[in-house]
Length: 395
Image 1 (cartoon, one colour):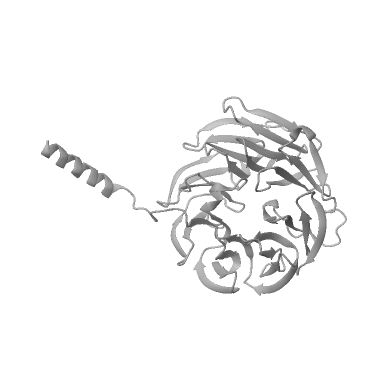
Image 2 (cartoon, one colour):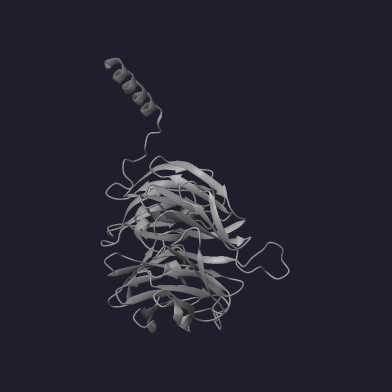
């Protein structure tokens, strides 16, 4: 018996010795930084000692990459522009599985229970669903076929998860919103909302999971679906939000995920304007504007909602501005460096991370003292995604 136990200990010891050592014992303070030009991601740690823990290559075209996380925060699902869906183990710094599921994907989401991954595609269109553990295909929703095109379907954008084991997305070419109920995984229940407006280019869901908003490239305003009352259909809100009649050129359409909620206020980047729009989320009325130095792209709010940071499209993409949310005024303009692309607060707001693409670095700022505390090297960084997103709807 003693020899058998000794043998078991030896075998287990050898197995442990062969296992890949973890980058970090826990994942709650980790995140992913996209290195867009190299098809790579960095594994980073935030907190008292910000650091780059590792780097993973071989993720394809990450020029428009987004990330979702598993419920246990250990796995990141990276959606690449080349149609690649890559599952990485951020604790061990390795690729677990990678599939090319389409020709040109534009983001995705993970289901409420963490079992399904949905990927929206430009080519061949539609949304494809995968098992989160194995990345095995589960089913596809192709959407309407394009006239005169063989095996091509309406481009799918704005894919988000919603409460009740649902996904919601928009169809650019046919002007629709689809709500997919997956309470019974083998029998997806699809509700279609048509004629929502021309060319929905992006979508987002409010943090409470109630309202799905689709931005319209071909019309002013936004299409809003109340998921509590889908029987009421889609309504148009914020009619002065859009690109029609703008005198200024639109250098970059803001992503709707760049909106920021602070109490009853929602701060929205104005398309083609040098202003941030202030909405009342109780009735979705337009309550005012905050003048800013350029065309805003992303707005992030410190978790205590007292302060918001804004970055800008070219030629003002070397600066950010800080807004006092209560007073609705800009309090500081900060020169960061060329090509500020993304910003991400740590869960409790003690740090703000910014990717500075053209300086090949990520900067870590103290948002209370407004001081730069750390520089981390990164090759053409873009998106910054921390693992606490695993517990936020629509991210």
